[in-house]
Amino acid sequence: MQEIENFLVQKEIRPTAMRLLIYKFMAQKSVASSLNELEQAFEKSERTTLYRTLKTFEKKAIVHRIDDGTGIAKFALCEDTCNCELGTDLHLHFHCTRCNETQCLTEQKIPHVILPKGFKATDANLVVKGICNKCPSC
Amino acid sequence: MQEIENFLVQKEIRPTAMRLLIYKFMAQKSVASSLNELEQAFEKSERTTLYRTLKTFEKKAIVHRIDDGTGIAKFALCEDTCNCELGTDLHLHFHCTRCNETQCLTEQKIPHVILPKGFKATDANLVVKGICNKCPSC
DNA sequence: AAAGACGTGCAACTCTTGTGCATTAACAGG
DNA sequence: CCTGTTAATGCACAAGAGTTGCACGTCTTT
Ligand SMILES: [Mn+2]
Ligand SMILES: [Mn+2]
Ligand SMILES: [Zn+2]
Ligand SMILES: [Zn+2]
Image 1 (tube, protein in one colour):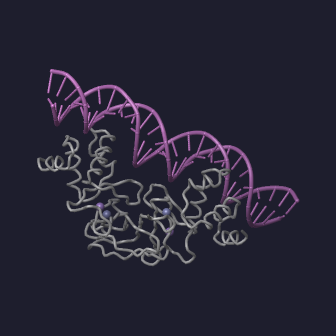
Image 2 (spheres, chains in turn red, blue, yellow, cyan):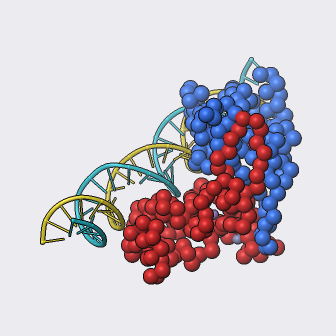
Image 3 (tube, rainbow over the protein chains, first blue to last red):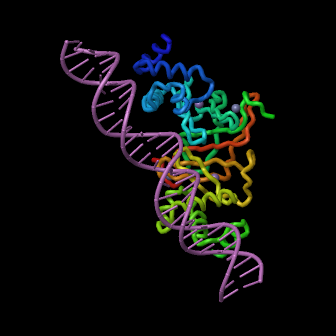
């Protein structure tokens, strides 16, 4: 917990109680979290606080927002080395249609695609859907 | 217009006036359409009608829904040959952050990615963001 | 300790999408 | 062409996620 506090301070984020708890919660999970999940995990806290905490974390680049196509935004901690740069950092995300969880596949970078003339890419999002490694597939 | 009517009938869709107009509208555009755009293009019609028309078209597989990450669903006509099969049909979508339009790049198929052990892919969505070929890039 | 900056809780709101139900239009069979 | 059945449309309303304004509380700095 002290480590988390140091980390937040180093990132210029005030280490309030809620922020420490939220960071810890997300760090212990191997899958991405939605605002609703945080709401259920921290029933004592307000949705707005959780919402703004995620916003702050996102702005300070310690979490990244994941759009997995479900219409519900998910958030996951960033890698230490991540700069979210196209071609080097952008990894794909996997959404399991069975357990409904979304996770980062940080080793799987988004493949480079050749665009038609006149198109310039600055960002990309690749979501693969299917059955994850924790769900029996048959 | 007669052609469109024949096409809809062949697809087991009643060729009502609105459906013909909506299909024609989408066929003339090179970019995907949102419900809002249809609403503005057909102010005489009801939002619900447009909404359900898109639903019908989607169910009959003559349009496909595009999730470009803007939070607003877009729709575009399917290719004649499209079966929406993973690995052969799934193309990428390009969202221009300048003109805010989304379009199908039907020639650019989603590259095959190797997933970690235990993951099984059934679907994929790749959205590339940047500047399109109709927007000046500098 | 005082002042200022920042975080939190509450309420209300926006925007998109979706649904129930009555009315109207299209189609098929005579 | 008329009629009954089925499907499409129009209207009202609602669910859900995301977002903002404002008052109040807490922390930091001087
Ligand atoms: Mn990720
Ligand atoms: Mn497409
Ligand atoms: Zn799973
Ligand atoms: Zn453009």
